[in-house]
Length: 576
Image 1 (cartoon, rainbow, N blue to C red):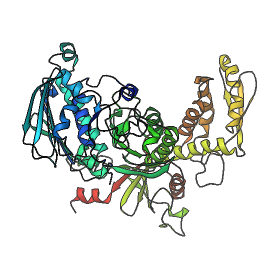
Image 2: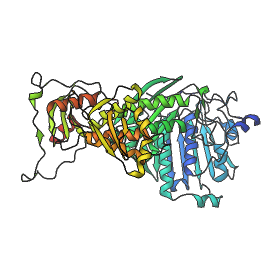
Image 3: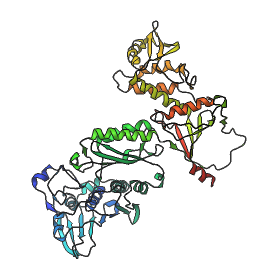
Image 4: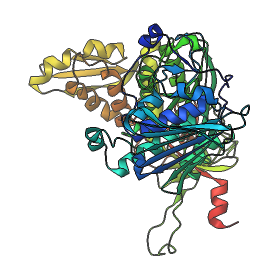
């Protein structure tokens, strides 16, 4: 359960000029969504447990925000609409901010560009008070019956600023931004009930259970019900990091669904986001991003929230260290999460005259002593090997699911990690039974020769042989590619070693990423091909080796290796 700390209600006062001058200032009200953000944040700071937002005309006609928070005493209400008037900096301490807002600018800024009415009451007062402002001036002041809490109504936004009204986007875009803002605020405050109404239609609602997973499902729909994976808890640099991330097969085409919550504030720390994206990019298809909610709780003194006018960005004092640890956590979870299979029920039975999928019978000659022994690995539950499907997939049965493993990508992941680890451990290279002759175009001989020393550091021993040829004599130990006694012997493609080395001719000498790209290319080219029948001992060896890798769910290109078919999905499809 994620709960925001509730601070006691404090009196509103005008900030001293010296403190107001130190606050990062800027345009607060840029569009209707800005109004919604400021008003909802005020409600959250007032310890509201239920916030209702009503929008008409994309927010240009009317925005109404009602909460059940502390409320504002009648004698303090005029102060609330003055500039630099706030109750959120009791000690004028900008180094220890525990609220979402603290500038005291939102209400007067809104009143300057719209008609604003604010009504509020507290549990200690028998009645409330309502102020109406236009062009920044109070035009009405009256008592009102109001339950404890506050209601703010903003009408005719930007009517007196034609240039800004003309600059607003179309209604569809403005409504989409409002929904995006409310979703972010709801994720940051899962213990608060939110309801967003668009033209009298309920568009978004949360129940305020305090559970982040429940809030995400309510906001994104039941598609997330079984698709969220926990992150943490992780203690690092005085911060506690927790969160949730969607399965690798459930992604989005943009970064709008990356939610970083720091001390209850939705924000976008640049260094942290860059680190997280670098962590998941190799594990997901190109251009895809996960649904992620990362919650960071840290001492307020260890975070600077006063660096962005709209407070959309903060700076963690240990941001790099926290980012690296959180990225490793995210990478580990995504790399070990198999994709789930999505069924599309057939509209008719298979045509018996068409070729049908076949499962190769297990070759028990290779495992006569224990043909049904489970395969035990750190990455997967105990699984029984069933056979090979269409000469490209390994079919396995787990305790509560079936697993399909792409034999090419599994071998690719194994080779890539062996190559990557060889850079750090520097093991003795494996001598090739026969050197591989590499012919190079005359124009490329000098350039290829310049790569020989760097290839040696990777375990590839290559030497000139004649005017335009080179001999590859030794390579890192690659299971299944070169001669050896392992069960994967002979399944790889050693003939691709030479062409793989020639891909370095397309690399820039100054590009720091050449190693990883080269290793990915080499692993892909030399891994076992799809369509090749494999004996049972080899199938087992591939699964066992894959289960020892750090990222068994995805190949180095980010494509899935393992698909999981849940027992519940089978039961549903067969109506058991």
